[in-house]
Length: 234
Image (cartoon, rainbow, N blue to C red; front, top):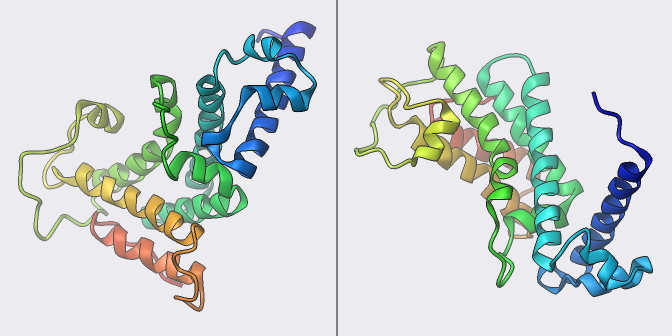
């Protein structure tokens, strides 16, 4: 293992401080209003000094996005690894952990799953971090298919298969019969997780339920049924 020298540690610490400051600016004014000059001014740095670390607003925004994706992805991975029981129980633990993280970091969640930032196009650098939750989902669903505990679909989806080569790579290749459509179904499950968390977090369930956490569990169970996973209720 290579031990970072003092200069590397100082650079790493300043990058952390820059991202923390930029994160507060995003929380206060939104990602579209992020300004390198304003961040530099708060830190007492010349703008030219900040540009040596992040050459543009978009580069700093990308760093914040990757950081948020990695944080929630790590939470999902830990929940999957730390939870015993059935595949459904593990997926429920992942869903609950992701929801909890989103409530603790609402501005980070909004940054990666909320309104797109005008003029910003996420570079390829974000893909690996953005797909960490999908990787957790795929591993759980495919493990259930492999051991036979995933219920085969009562009504298979019509072909042809719609997922791209990138999704097949993430899944380790096309699923075998009778689960040929499991990846399309699994992406619906992933969208249900992200969408349900967002729907609640952005205030759309206000006054609709007496217990948002219990409703979330029900929503995840309903979505999981479509892919063949059985999640516990209660």
